[in-house]
Amino acid sequence: MSGHSKWSTIKRKKAAADQKRGKIFTKLIKEITVAARQGGGDIDGNPRLRLAVDNAKSANMPMDNIERAIKKATGEVEGASYLELTYEGYGPGGVAVLVECVTDNKNRTVAEVRHAFTKHGGSLGETGSVAWMFNRKGVITLPAQGKTEDEMMELVLEAGAEDLQAEDDFFEITAAIEDFENVRKTIVDASLEVENASLQWIAKNTVEVSGDTSEKLIKMIDMLEDSDDVQNVYTNADFQDVE
Image (tube, rainbow, N blue to C red):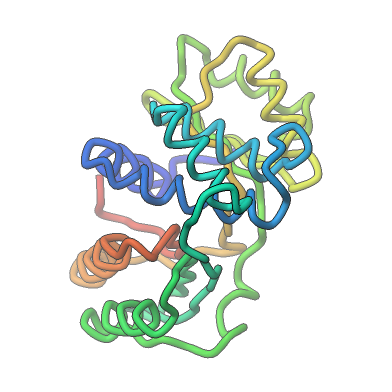
């Protein structure tokens, strides 16, 4: 299906680093809170919440933390009120960048996002300036767990997957939103461990970056992700010289 993706590898390494620092818990709690506030605290009746809780469990978050976040969202205990925001712009080399945020202070968040863009040679754009370059897809990441690329491809294609990227020790599977849950369930039913399953923005086409441009873009993304308000960063960059 699809070939090697440096960005997939980079994202996975970043997620692993965040988990070691405990930073991933902040993002997961915010996602659980927003999901529960929007769709209610019943995991069985709220697909977004069920997904958020599954990802939290995969990251070894204690159940007490998960339950507390749900209770704050549903008003059982006092908690912050979060707003979901998406910022769009151009990074070094003119690549498109989407930044998803969850915040209790919009002014602080936009200031931090704008600073990260301008500091590294990018620019924040208007709503809709780059979103058209991306499609919303379901993305599932899991360790190889002894499966060959052909075995995994056969499993997920039958479930409705659109794409599979095979790396040295993991797979990244992409599916249309309407097929996402069926693909995820098929993987779980096959007794395979899912590392992360989420809706993401996937670039329709990529732009090759290398050298100084690649380095500046990575630094910009790192700075954005260091903000507690930033949940996810997406780009259409195809990194040529990053391992």
